[in-house]
Amino acid sequence: MSMTLRHNLIGLTIAFVAIAGGAVWLNVRNQKEQQKPQPKAPVSNESSPKEQPNTESFNKKLYSTTDPTSIWVVVNKKHPLNPKTHVPSELSTPSVKLRLGSGEEQMKFRKLAQADLAGMFNAARADGVNLVFGSGYRSYALQKQFYDGYVAKDGQDKADTYSARPGYSEHQTGLAVDLTSPSGQCHLEICWENTLEGKWIAANAYKYGFIMRYPPDTQDVTGYQYEPWHLRYVGKELSSEMHDQKVQTLEEFFEINGGTSY
Image (tube, rainbow, N blue to C red; front, side, top):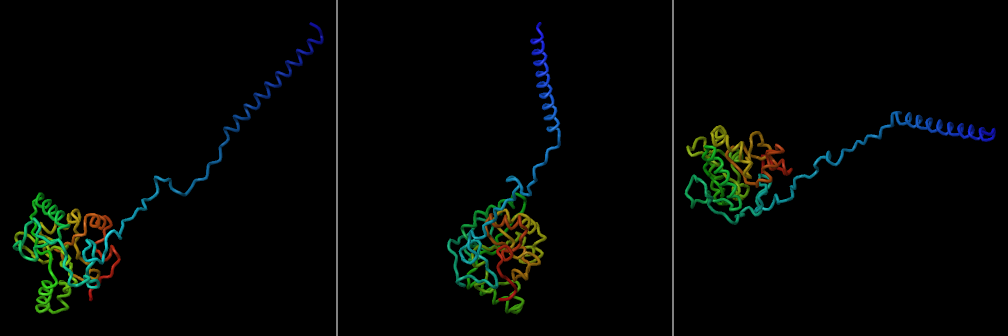
């Protein structure tokens, strides 16, 4: 082998070794870089879409609270029916157990609420509880007759704690009902809450679109003493919402004035 050729081979070998060494060095360097702790991405305080709270709220404007024909109409000492002599349409006798004869005015109820009323009575009966429809619709004239009798008996101040003046009564809407027991035990008395019927109603009425209109300890809000027997039909949507929110009265739910005075 000539000296020149030998020198060329040695040069090529050295160059190859240098290139290979450089490649190894770069590979080692890259591995070290990869092993270094990587900076963490900033953490957002915003929740992911799945964690966002449900902002959909109950529509309190779905039905009127002033229209006397509305199932959400609020009637109390500050808010009479308009007109005060209002007579609801589509009144008829419901197919449930009645306290009086079917021809009596008080045995009438709004037709739109009768299916849920019957459903409640049937469900109670399935649980061994027999409800009685005690008093439903009362006209302006009939409510005046009742109210005047209570005033004559107990005086107006006392009567105003448990009876509405004509034109201010929920019964006049055809959507309120006083329930009672077959035995007549504690009829229109607070002790009705302790009867089998009263306990069942307190636990289940909301499932059928009814609320206890005058719950305990709310007289300053509703204007009336506790009446465990007095139910008001508002529809299942509202009764369930009030139950879920643990709001007892229409005044509180709709933020409408009530109070003890007219």
